[in-house]
Length: 503
Ligand SMILES: Cc1cc2nc3c(=O)[nH]c(=O)nc-3n(C[C@H](O)[C@H](O)[C@H](O)COP(=O)(O)OP(=O)(O)OC[C@H]3O[C@@H](n4cnc5c(N)ncnc54)[C@H](O)[C@@H]3O)c2cc1C
Image: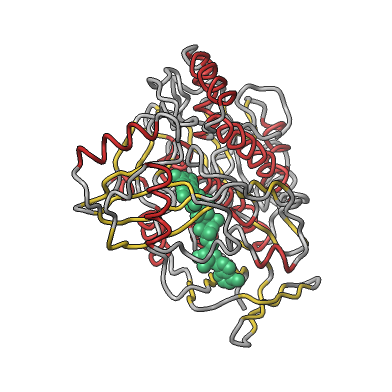
């Protein structure tokens, strides 16, 4: 019996399964599709997702297949120079098509021996005190201790467990596709420039050879958005919106999307959890949905693994929802605002001009970029220190080099500049590095496996208290935790995984 069934092999599901596998959790990923979709939805990754990949040692393979762009211009497409002072060592957008992101995550899953099963549609589920039984369309059943719905905006899992999905329905649909164009590049550029002066939901851009990505407003809201548009529908809408169909032909694929905005009322119902689009949907303004899903998975993975392993402290798994739901609510709000700013209404256009003017104030632009890039997220982990609840950027340590290189295994990390602290008793969950760094604004910090700071200071007793809150009771060697663990643990080094032994 697997520990966890993950429903959906999109970016969220694969990312989650990979995180679980790092911790030795046996996860089975089910997807109803026989093969990954060629439809290119997301076009890029933002700073926090880039950091997440770096924290797991995966960034190089993504950089090798992507292109980096400046971060300015992502809020409602309002072009501005990059703001200075972003708190990240990766202040760029990584342009990489969603199918490539999914392929690279899937290749990683293969390395980690994640069990991905395609052509497996979840149609029912039953949960009890000990586990969840997934019922599949072919009549088979699969039982696991937990089940996570990463099955997209129309989540079957969400419906089956009765979690509400309140919000606004789609008001406008947009057609999207990759097609060949019959017009010259000059004509296409002139049409795009003219139409985009007022209609921001229009675009035609080359993606390789004769093939172009075409985005054009639809004529209405589709009853069934899973039904792709026809070539004739795309041509008709191009003529309506741009006055020419640009001679489009030979579509590689066609798709449509709406602007519905919805947030799951809860992220958990007993042993069933939701992540990614299954938990939140919004228009693709600013390119945030896939990023949000990856970061949900990064938050959930180690917590669910801790439950499975049996060391999770009381309430740890529920912090997934209390932390990530407000983050999604904020993204929903910023996309609602962006949708207003791209409206062709004269009042909205005036508001766009005003916002553009305000964005010339660097502080304002930086705040908006921080929202899109998810680099200023602060979870409520208690305490006052400025670092608490934030993820630490990839600071440079004196002897060990970059911080994120120490986090590939997905474990907790105590970075100790004092050389006097100990994590004895938690060696199986927390690594220790004794080192100094100019960019580290605390004597020592305790990082969760997702890189968020849950303790900063120099007091061993206080550290032990926070260690228990986030990593559960210490084993043998912890203060009071076993025959050898009595008394104060400060200064103990035996049995530690320590990258360096002195400050
Ligand atoms: C036009 C467009 C552009 C976008 N651009 C960006 C962007 O630039 N940046 C960005 O971050 N995001 C962007 N997004 C959003 C992004 O595509 C989604 O947020 C992302 O795909 C969500 O990933 P997911 O894994 O949560 O869900 P999905 O990608 O929807 O994957 C869900 C998976 O679950 C499977 N499934 C569904 N039901 C079942 C079932 N019952 N049983 C088994 N399997 C099931 C599906 O087959 C699918 O493989 C864009 C979206 C659109 C439409």
